[in-house]
Amino acid sequence: MSASTVSAGQPGEPGKAGQPGEPGQAGQPGNEPARSGRSFRWWALAAVSLANLMAYLDNNIVNVAIPTIQRSLHLSVSGLEWVVSSYLLTLAGLLLVGGRLADVYGRRRVFLAGLAVFTLSSLAAGLAGSGGVLIASRAVQGVGAALLLPATLAIIVAAFTDVRERTMAIGIWAAVGALALALGPALGGLISQHLHWGWIFLINVPLGVITSVLAVLYVAESRAGSAVRRLDLPGVLTSALALFALTYALIEGNVSGWTAPLILGAFAVAAVSAAAFLAIEARAEHPMVDLSMFRRREFSGGSVTMMIWAFGILGIYFFTSIYLQQTLGFSPVEAGLAFVPMALTVAVFASIAPRVEARAGAHRTVAAGMLLMVIGLVLFARLGEHAGYTSLLPGFILFGAGAGLMNVPVTNASMQAVPTARAGVASALLNASREVAGLLGITVIGAVLRTRQGDALRAGASPVHAFVDGYHLGLLVTILLLAGGVVVSYLTLRPRAAATQAAPARESAAVAELATVDELAAELIAADEITR
Image 1: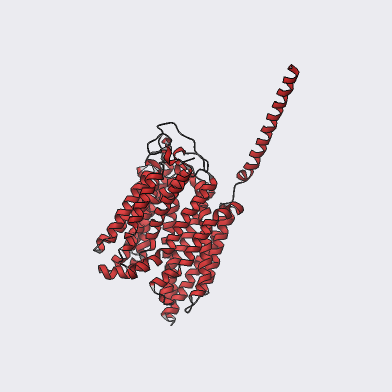
Image 2: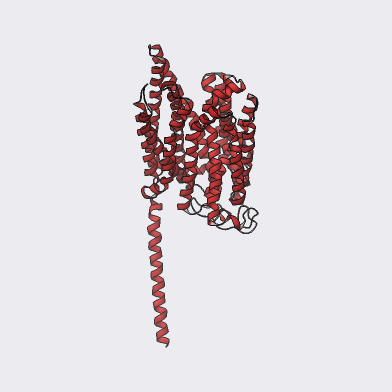
């Protein structure tokens, strides 16, 4: 069944074909039969996976190239920070809006619009001749990513109605995203060292064109049912304001100080906006976010698990890059390449995660992945000031294996827990929680690291030793949090008793029905013989 025959239904259930003229159903323009073939949905998966690659690559590809960009454009430290932060600010702030727009106006349409914005702004960023143009282009890139990212997962959910195929598709999608996250620094280092830094962004242009062609040819349109296809403007505005303010406070708090009036004001705006958003959504006839989604433990637990994962992987990823360069003396390229084994391990284990999940269940698979990440971090916590590449490798591999193993099942379990009509918003919630938790991880681990580092310096430790002390304490905080994630994921993602008993019950009913049919057939044959 293709995306053109998917309607709003119960979690994890294929929708029914709508009547001609129904929005997002068969018979609607853009849902041509050519896009309903079995092979076409795999081409659609290739399109959304490429878009996922581009968006996540731009999340961290800039970090290694920052010194080169600063020399080229003569940027101040503040301007340099906003080259990175402007993308994260608009991306995190508008993810929920992008998800709702996809559900209301069509996932394919919003995906293509976001892809166009992202590709054109990448071109502008790559050709930028001043810091202002680059920062503005990065902000627009974030807008494009906020439109296309929620649509990618929603398109997969709509196109793949078979549970096994959907799990495999989400696995590929997640593996590509994780690979981009890990390969960003390596690619950024290679480009900044051997090419003009602008190619960090210009590589998105041919990728964007190829992805657009695939999407136009193979992605079928899908959207929410007509009953829920309304835009909740108060919800859109309050959610965007809350996420913008929170993201801004987390980004600027380290620079301006957490007690600065501007930062405290941003946190206050975020809190008030979030409270207003919840009040609006609880009373709205057609809410932007159906709060009842969070009553399902699979979705709420999956979201919390995703936040813990993002807190750990993005926070530690950021400070491990610093550790490799400032403590161990790696060059930017060497530091980026050191993450490649982890990236490959993430991709490999993300690809096999669906098969592990089918045998062990989502709760055991995700908990095992989190546990592997904990073990990997414990190995890192034992490293000191003179670690070599070979001593880094076991921690990288175990951490990558755990991250790859848990990401697909937690995404799949969360998305199956919500109706297909809400797939765009559900995807946006998962992505927003991941972005905000990642920033929170950098913020919290950074605060812990700097506090311990300052204490060590005042006690007479060398700068290198002081940083390693702070890094180890940050690792300990993350280890404890991820250990909590093992418990959370195991308890919340367990299959419900009704679900586990449903298959035997259906099988018993089918057997009973066949027995009844056999009895009726026997009676008819006997009656026929008597008549003769």
